[in-house]
Image (cartoon, helix red, strand yellow):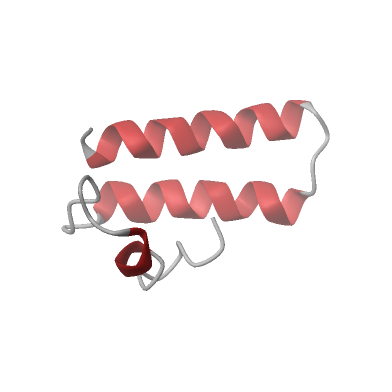
Length: 61
């Protein structure tokens, strides 16, 4: 799965969370993560979770 697919899923999740009245800070966190993933040069697919959590903006998603 390419980074832009992952970013699309996170953005879609943020939209659904917004529709269901979730915490706005949590929603913004997903939106920020989607943006960072789209711009990232690091390929996320196949990368261990412990490495992904080190990337700025993905620590809490």
